[in-house]
Length: 404
Image 1 (cartoon, helix red, strand yellow):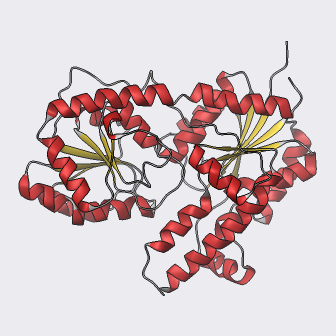
Image 2 (image 1 turned 30 degrees about the horizontal axis):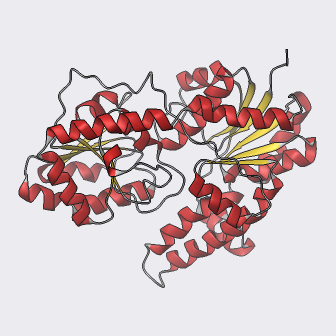
Image 3 (image 1 turned 180 degrees about the horizontal axis):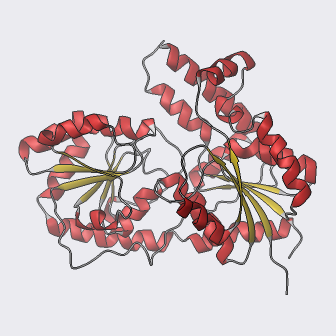
């Protein structure tokens, strides 16, 4: 009988509570490592308030290695990135004190492999590989430079911020092109990202390992009647691009649909919703805020909305909404990596007219909402499994560690 695989997992974020897409991805990988019999030491930064309950949750699945370190984009860091001509995103996660922290960790702990979540943590993994000669892998939750590139493209031309963001995107692209091949294995989450990763780094080993969903948790309550007039967004509004997409939708779509159907409202769920949005209740904006469990709210809504114009990777929130039998209206960028069609309950809308027409059509037809919702759940559950996708990672890691 083979012994347990010992994994050092490097994460830029504390994973619990799993209340946004990024934390959902990292947290479920950790949980599935544990369920598959791996012994995990989990490193992350403490850069925001973390409850005692969240720490206890982390201890259920791992040996926590926690370092107090802020990863905010401060003015000094921005200035430093300009003068050093390096990516601020990479630099802020791997400053000298961070690398020094691992010198002691190496002496006290033994690992078979080092699993890296996000490109931000790549320099730490490369440092550890040099020090320990252990194999390293990286989970490409996003192709990071694409997020910065798409962000720059929506900013005004010749604006100083656009110039800075464009340059940062190029720096990230160069970094990703170089480091992918230095990892023993990379795990992009979609075939789209695999293709792009290989274009950046043809010599790298890219193995697709998609996201998943817990089908025992995301279960609709069939006794609750859906409201076809309720649109819903559940996300984290501190991420600028989520907020920008919402504001675009409020300005360009909501007035059109409410002119024809004044009963339509948009419910907002999530952390860090700006207070000023509460002023738009008369315009159909219903601010719910942060909730411990989004399922009851998803269960009674009629349509899930994802007006996102900047991003990369895959939106786990879409998969979850589909599992809750919600038809989803999303931009092409938001739906990237999810190979569902309109008949599967994922309808692509890239402008105000497309959003408006589909919302008005669905709001008049509860049976259509229900039919698309049934199809959406079937698609979500049949295509996304944490267990099967994390097994792909574990099998690759065991081979690299020579345990099989």
